Amino acid sequence: MEAIYIIIGIIVVLLLWVIITYNNFIIMIKGMEQSKSAIDVYLKQRFDLIPNLIECVKTYMNYEKSTFEKITALRNEYNNKNDFDTANKVNSEYNKLILLAEQYPDLKTDSQFALLQKNLVKIESQLQAARRIYNGDITMYNAKVKTIPSNIIANIFNFKEKDLFEIDADESKNININM
Image (cartoon, rainbow, N blue to C red; front, top):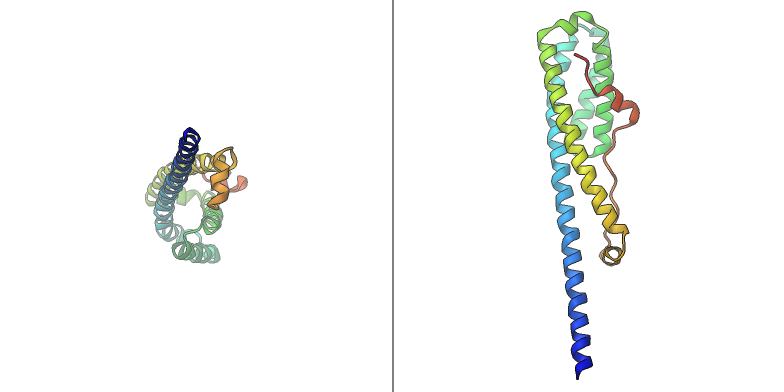
């Protein structure tokens, strides 16, 4: 009779452990979704400034029309998809635009352009902070998916590792806007 109580106790403890571990995975996934949402908000704020930046820069760089059109198309694609691959493409084109703008001394002294640069720098720092939080959440989740004993629950319930949000090394050098 005592053995039955011991077996029932072990089953209850295991069941509680499964429930708690599963719930921890769900909580971590919801945290990652919230962190991703914060990145999305900052990306959209950044991308909302792009048309203003383009209008400001257009008067100085009439021959760069294809760059403007590509940025606008990618921005619209991001608004439809909300994925990080498209965001990286927009970042790449956006950085090319900023580098082009740096070649025009008259543009750098334009007050509207200076204000846009200031706003973009602020959004960039907020975006970097949100990305660090998101990547921290992803790293903790991935560690839990891979470590014993939680990896048992991860395998049973098909919790898979997630990718970090990274900006290409070449792109990240250009993100800090010189004022």
